[in-house]
Length: 149
Image 1 (cartoon, helix red, strand yellow):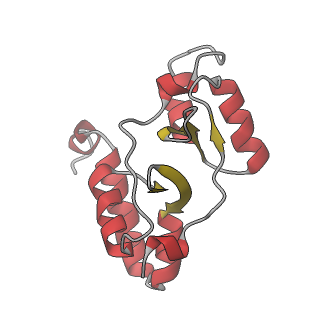
Image 2 (tube, rainbow, N blue to C red):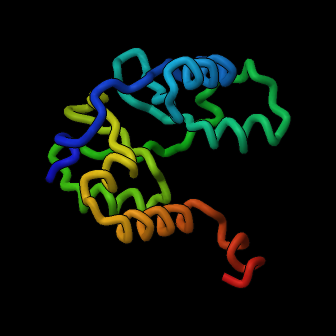
């Protein structure tokens, strides 16, 4: 199965200059966990997640008027609509990400999430394993060393 078949076609976007406060408001209004930053040409240049806002803005005491671009995950990791679910899964695990913007011919066309992929596999054990692998890849090594992992 291809990610183009399971992706969500409507993606919440904003310009890189959008303030982190505005990005958070968009997430709340649209009930999403991320906003893809898109430049004037329509090219996806970054993604800011609810976790980015919590860790990079709120926890560090930054003001809410800073541009979202400075707190986005970069470089942006993307997939193409013809990528298999397995390829997308491995890419997400390798980069420790739960959301993969889908780009076709340089243009943002959708988003595939870990939830989208695991819902299609109908394999709860695999879903649990993937979640653990992505979480481990996303956390710094010291997190596991301090906890005997």
